[in-house]
Length: 100
Image 1 (cartoon, rainbow, N blue to C red):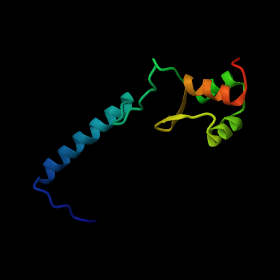
Image 2 (tube, rainbow, N blue to C red; image 1 turned 90 degrees about the horizontal axis):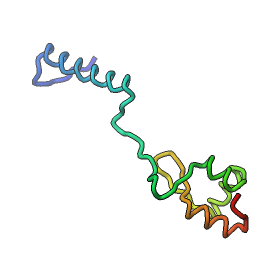
Image 3 (cartoon, rainbow, N blue to C red; image 1 turned 120 degrees about the vertical axis):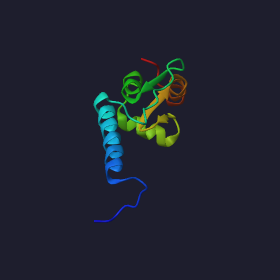
């Protein structure tokens, strides 16, 4: 086992470590994390992939193809994918489909 050299005594180090672990467990139990996902702005009008798919009446594979072709431009926030109402309107105009 490797030795760690600190200016703390063994007892002080154990107390500090114990308090940090307790606080981390409390946060985890409350569902708090250091990084909270940022929700999309509500006033601009962003929609999830599922909402957009239903609105356009197309399959996910079609949406993926449209993304790659530049027809439907997504906005990624973290791992989430959102589409603005403006991007949806542009995709409808480019694809020739009408809004359902």
